[in-house]
Image (tube, rainbow, N blue to C red; front, side, top):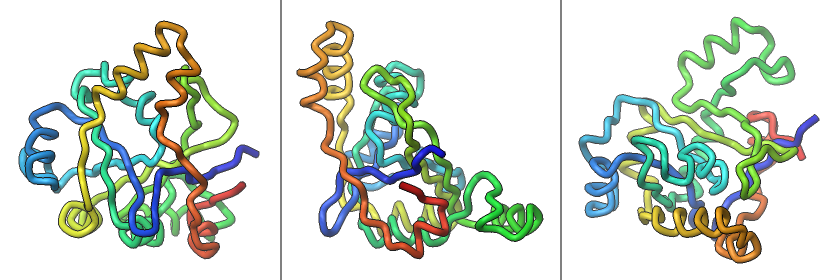
Length: 197
């Protein structure tokens, strides 16, 4: 069985998550240090603590609409609220007593969690999974209005690391990666999200 582990950049107060958007969204967010229109509060928004999974998702900032990568520091209490109020995006018999119960929880939960293969610096699959957290409804409101501590555009750094990889300067590229450590999630929350290590 593949391990499902939360690795992240964090300190005592905050955890860093990543998102990628087009400049029409990122520029106002950087100026205001919070998301404002045209960011849509009504849509589900996904936050990811894995830098390399974000690079896989946005193609090192090359995918249309994902040209700008934001490193967003949010309060750890917000992150843990999200985990506590989440439903897995797939049915797990050890957590939900029936598929009907899971479907109802999925329909009403403000947070959705899925575990996707972590990536290496070449964006190949690794043998463990990283968490992606989808926020909707009240969770988006909390994220935007309460949780965000700072927003930084790291797009140029992403492109620089990518250029080093393309030029086979792998050691140099790896030295620039964020230092992600295993996040100390409380045991009761680990069970809820099918965390395993």
